[in-house]
Image 1 (tube, rainbow, N blue to C red):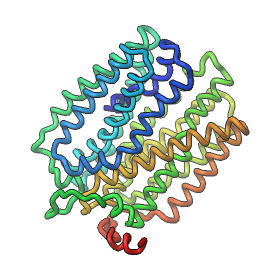
Image 2 (spheres, helix red, strand yellow; image 1 turned 180 degrees about the vertical axis):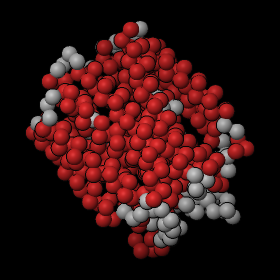
Image 3 (tube, rainbow, N blue to C red; image 1 turned 60 degrees about the vertical axis):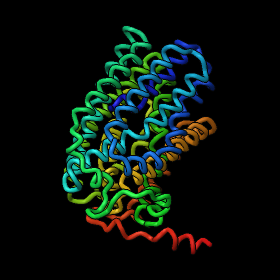
Length: 397
């Protein structure tokens, strides 16, 4: 699943530029649309996963749809078919992360979730690393089209792999973090009910701030490498991604274990690394040093990927809205990441890379302080202490 859920987006821009001869504006629109759609559909997708018992079928269906979208990219060079296919990719991507987390929770329960999520993320990063290596070799020695056929193969393999999970092993009530006597019901005020919980609200804002500081860094580092050594910039960037993913494999496993002694102090490390990394990027020009610095992202992202899901499970325990909360948080993350890329690009264009990375460092410092001062320790927290939506409506009225 590691590579499938991204819909080969990282290679699509190069394919459209070098093989299809698209202009940068068209490519930018097509690359942006999955993220925009994802921001809009994550909460309803999470709510759907809370209420359905066909979680395996959702994963299989999403994988087959992405396979079809890859075929459209290969067979069509026209703007609108590929635009629509990428919008569909954004729609289907929204089910992967919450579905796998829900199935994991439904199988192992809260007590074992941190270990399971750590294992999930270790294999996720290992898959990303191996897929990047294979795709890079295919693109270099076969063709760019071969990368998309490789993705189709992964989609089919994923669909078969999901069937290995036994339906009887999944407790669907537990999978949405419901209490023992709670049954799934339709709740149109679910998002409002979650965000009227102060702990959930500040946690969601903190996750968005993390990506507001983080998302623009790697693309800007890639651009900076291109200015220093245009011929080998893609090689440096690929090395940075592969090295970071390799670090994440081990960090994810370790983070799941130490988070049993407290989630917040482990997540704090990921936040603290944000401004450090940004400052280093601002003042380093050597491509080898830039590549090595990206290893810090392996530590931060490895921690974030594991502990964020565990904290979401803590905050939603007993509410029956685990997957809805995942959707809300992922939407906030997507929004933060989108703004980061836009704002980071504007600042760099106007004032240069040093100011651009310095600005991201400032956001990282603010996000770190916000997290440390306002977000509580979630282990053993009472997640059900929410302000009722009707009370909030009365107050607003």
